[in-house]
Image: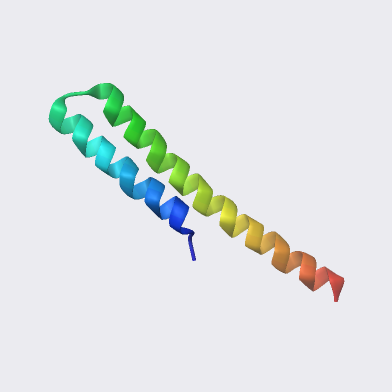
Length: 61
């Protein structure tokens, strides 16, 4: 399960992208893309963290 923080980053990033497209503001659109990517990276890091913890527990047995 992804965290609330990563989901929030994806949603707000997407909103910024749309806002930038509507207002013709390339900077705002790019900020949105960066925030979406940040949210995806957070989710991926969480998955890897859980996987490593699971493997560590398996090795400890």
